[in-house]
Each structure stands twice: as structure tokens, then as C-alpha cells.
Length: 242
Image 1: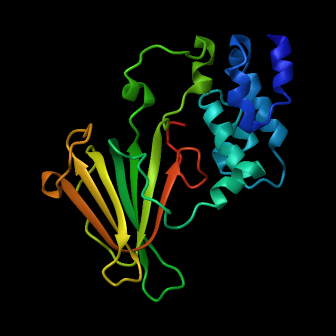
Image 2: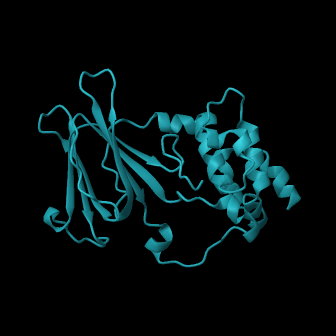
């Protein structure tokens, strides 16, 4: 396995998945703490602006090492940083990846900026339906037992939907419910956007049509921005367990 660990030192971050598919030894190398530590050191620079959890003194912890290195790359590695800088304030198409995700947390905060009136930021943290459940498969490669801490990630399959509005809007309790429908349309004032969220008690499968009266509907209008952050995004909040 030593030769694969040596070769891994020359793999670009975006090619790690391809490298791990070469053979089992290559995959095993990408499970090790040494691999992720070296990857971090290779791209770390003294002028990197990193959250406390992603700074060198915190990266000595084995728990969540892989997740933390991936998150740090979106701060330090230009090709990854460029990806997120191109994300528009309003999605060009309605995101469909959140369908049947479970709402774990909800919070809002007032944003005081250059506007005379403050804006409001509504945050919904979701746990996506895992691919394993979608395909009903079991098994699959699991990291060696000695590297379980390295691959631990309490935010795996999680994302944050952040909607900023021009006014405060009362939101009913949706934590614990399943997110089944997401719509983005033109606001009633024809100058902004309108976001509709529909939550149900259970997932909706197949081509079953949804009716708003069957669940809890949340309407956000007028909307300034809609952003969707995966767990590795710099603006995604850290889990206290990471």
C-alpha cells in the first residue's frame, strides 16, 4: 500500500474519487488519516482565512478529519472556491435535490445592512434521503474500523436552505417534517421572487400529486435571495459534534 500512498501525494483534490476507484489499495489509502493530513498540508497557506475548526492546530483531531479537510479546501483551493463563487443569488431553476428531505432545524435572524429597513434570513437545515435508501441497496464499501473517526461526519447528506426576505414572515413549526415541494415564482410586486415550501408528515413517492391543504405550506414573499449550501460550503454552519 506504500506505493499508493506515495502516488496519492500527486493527486489533485478533484481527482480523489477517480484515484480511489483504481483498486482496493488505492481506495484504502484515501481512507487513512495520513492521506487527508497530507492533502491539507499541501494546500494550506499562512494567509488562508479559515474558521477555528479548520486551522492547523485543530486539524490534529482524527474525528471528522476527512470532512474538515474537504471543507477547508473550499476556502484554500482555488478551483473549489471558484465553483461556489459562481452560484447566483436566485437559482436559475428550482432545486429538486431537497425532495423528501427531513427538516432538522429552523432558525431566522435579522440582517441590518445598507437598506433603511432590515432584511430577514430564514434558515432550514435538511437531511437528504441517502442514495442507499433511494436505491434500496445494502452493504457497500465501508472505511476500515481504525479510520471510522476520520470518516465520521455528523453533517453527511445535510444541507442548508437559506432564504432572505425583505420583511419578517411568521413561519409555522416544520422541524421534523418532510420537505416535499419547492417552488420559486415571481412575487406579487413583480420585482422580486416568491418562494413556496410544502412540508408533509411522510415522504411522497412516485408521481403522486401534492395539494397544499394536505401539508404545512410556507410562503416567503418578497424574496431577496435563495441559497442552498451543502455541508462542505464555507457558509454552512459547523455541527457542534464535528
